[in-house]
Image (cartoon, rainbow, N blue to C red):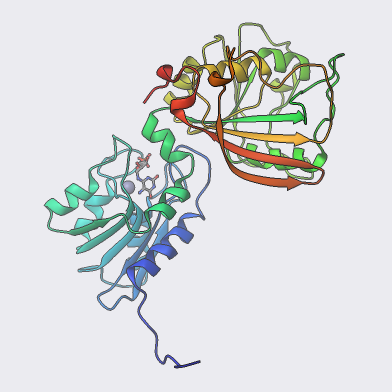
Length: 358
Ligand code: AOF
Ligand code: ZN
């Protein structure tokens, strides 16, 4: 080595932001609120306090970091707050963080991502008005990645929609006689289960609910239910039998008696649902795709050929190849004998993108 550093180097604001991003990841991935982390730095770059948001109804990251500094007996007058999301200005479940930072005498605030939430935004402006130096956009790509589905959901005013498909190599979900267990392997099915634990709601059509009798719960490898369960949403006009598994243990069951995906999403948006997993069947998948209301597809593909039987997606109204719904592949993951393809739908390429809410 050319040189040996002696003493403790003060962390830079970028280092502090990287640490704030790590702290934020301790927060819950699902739920109405974003994952946020905050580090308070002193004049010499020393850490005065740190905090992260533990979910809706608990202290925001900034307030948690101020409390941590107070518990350590550190003064925050003139401190720099490094925070992954713009401090809020509103009183919602808790108070406005911009006011808390001003009251604590913070002199500079460094933000990764501006808050797109119309209710909460404006913190940077409020802080500047109060004479606080504010800089935004530090490690912005990392900050946006951390926010996951929350960011597009809040920007668009509707939940982010992931469509899950589990098919044969020729895109089918059942053989001609309707038998379908199991096309994809156990490793794929476990993988798909893990995603259920990260979303706020799982949506199926009444056809799938009646034929498959799913429980739509998030379970671990041992089959035990996770502590937090996604909302279970059934879409369609037909009734469910009283002994359906959907009435058993798991998340709250909501039956939306419509065929309109936009109506389903606006109802879920009112409940602050940020991430929806559409699990089928083909009719519901096609309805969401036709409405331009699918953001991302997770396709589990098994090396099985069926030749006939139901396809994963019903008629999309595509009659010519130029009208096909073309996606962009984001990742490909081998899973035992199968493959998971994650692909996103470009909003402008969806069949009826004019119906999409912005
Ligand atoms: C958080 N945690 O650390 C920050 C947030 O429901 P409320 O009243 O807690 O407000 C949630 C909104 O506050 C959230 O959507 C986001 O816009 C803003 N900032 N939220 O949950 C935090 N800093
Ligand atoms: Zn806040």
